[in-house]
Length: 309
Image (cartoon, rainbow, N blue to C red; front, side, top):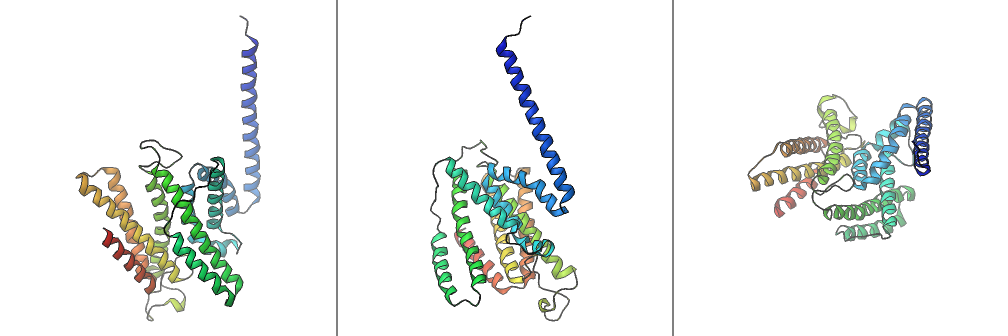
């Protein structure tokens, strides 16, 4: 039996391809093995996870937003254990997500800046904040805070585009990781898990630890204001307040769905329990922060929610 030359050539190509994949895998394994053995534990873990995170965010940039919101509150704790740096994991995930969004836009040969209502008030605020820097006690600290607000405006534009893209996807078909049916739950779940982790830390600090910074003590009693990993109760209170509001909104949405269809399926029931538990945890963290400003903010948010409901 004679084998044709083109067939033999195809076999050789496949063999070379397999050999290339094997050598690349072996090289990658050796590099990662050396890095894991040489680097400190946290750095080694980050090195191993980084490629997977990059691939995940490239396939679905909204997952990068969710991971950023999960990681950002832990920035202060990272500085304690890893030392203060220019960028923490939240900032790195922000830059990665924006870079992926720009890359995908470049490949599509268009950058879409969709209308986002929040951008105008943010622009006005940024203008006033920029003028206030002229008389700032610390120009460096002022610029740092201004950059954070610029990042919020950028995230608003990017999220508006990515969420509109999800709405435009065909029903029943998954593009990337998020589909029109289940994509929102993945993103909301990432946000709620990050918020719940902070709320649980705050609950422990308030009622279970039994000690804390003296200036956080409440009326000289056994309780201390919750502050999570934020190092301060007020930003912690602000964070868990919108986590609680998001959880309340998601739980109310499920209740409205059940009322409309007169049917409760198991999957959506467990989702309802999850968002309800997250909103209760965040609400407790909000109360335990003893932040009156955060209380007022949450009350105002709930008033607007009930008005439109």
